[in-house]
Amino acid sequence: MKLIIGDKNYSSWSMRPWLVLKHFGIAFEEIMIPLFEPETKASILAHSPSGKVPSLLTDDGVTVWDSLAICETLAERHPQHALWPRDAVARGRARSVSAEMHSGFGDLRSNMWMNIRASFPGKGATPGALADIARIDAIWSECLETYGGPFLFGDFTIADAMYAPVVMRFNTWQPKLSAAAGAYARRVTEQPAVAAWISDALREGHDIAKYDVCA
Ligand SMILES: N[C@@H](CCC(=O)N[C@@H](CS)C(=O)NCC(=O)O)C(=O)O
Image (cartoon, rainbow, N blue to C red; front, side):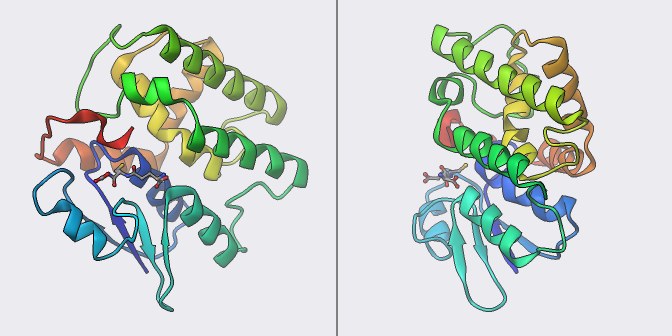
C-alpha cells in the first residue's frame, strides 16, 4: 500500500491518513511530492485524479483520494483496529465532527494555515477565524467531557487525526483556548505518530511562498 503525500510542514490533508496508518501500525510506503514546484501537478496527477494529495494506492489496485475517503477505506479494510469508536453513538458523533472539520472552518484554514516550522503568535485572528476556533474548542471540550479523554473518544481515532493539523495551526498561531482544549492540544502534539510527523516536518528544507495551498 502506498500513501502519496505533500510536504509534512504544510500538507494538513496528508497528515490525517498518515497518522491513522502510523498510529495503528498498518504497513505502508509513503511517497512525498513537494508542493508548488513546476512539476508538482503532473507528479500528483500520476497518482491522484483530483490532482491533490493525499491519495492511497492499495495493493489490490484501488486508488482512493481525499483524506476522509482514505480514512473510511482504512477503517473498512482493518476492522481489527478501532479506527472509529466501537460504540455506535460515539461513532456517529466521531464521524460528524470529522466531517465538520473536513467540510468547514474555512476562515481558520485560510487565516491560520499549517506551517509547523513557523511561529505567528497573535496573528490571523479575524472574527471568522475566532468563531471557528470557538466551535472547535466546544467540540473538543464536549467530547473530552463525555468520553473522559485522553483523546476525543477515549483512545486515538480518526477524529483525532482529522483535528491534528488544527492542533498544528494552534501551536503556530497560539490562539486562546479553554484549559481543556489547550491540554488536549498538548496531548495530541506529544502523541507518538504526531510527534514523528512533526519531527519529519522540522527536518524538511523545502520552503514555499504560497502558504494557503493546503487550506
Ligand atoms: N479535500 C481534500 C483536499 C486535498 C488538498 O487540498 N490537498 C492539497 C495539499 S494539502 C493539494 O494537493 N494541493 C495541491 C494543488 O492544489 O495543486 C482532502 O481532504 O484530501
